[in-house]
Image (cartoon, one colour):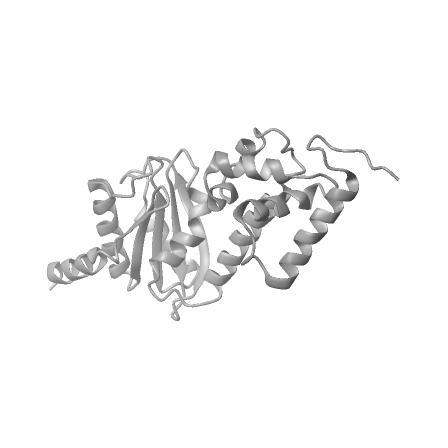
Length: 246
């Protein structure tokens, strides 16, 4: 019996055999033995199990330069590649959303432990493509576990937009004992502006008055971040507050 060939010259029998070998290869040894394009191919075929996606996977890798680039790519950009449609991107979207859920669950179920990298990993996917600045607050309990995450506002971060009083009211409502502030810089450069520094200092002072602790303020850029705690600035503001209130 002859099987009709696809645009790549592969018969249905060839395609099914190839996909079966990919699945068996994964079940035997995970992704260690896979080339990057094979991982992408496997994900693309989740949404179209009867279609050969090898060439589309190779093209996606060329377009976005790395496996990470493909996995982080915008769905609309992926669909610009010939042969990748709405069904094909199912696997990519699935991996993106599972990763976000995993990172969020991990963040919400274990101590923060002053890990700015973990906060960055969790929030980078949700903030990296935004055209406006988003200012978030993570509320933590006495064991430094995150009990709530809240987006305070969208737009330019300045003193007229950040309301310390409202943040402290939420902290009391959630019964939080410490706070982490996070916002993004759409420019991609996470270096804090003078306004960012002044707002952080004001928030640290306001928290101290309410007997709350600010653990960090993290600014997210293009695959990089700035941590006020890592640079020692949160500690500097704590000490400044104490010196002014002696």
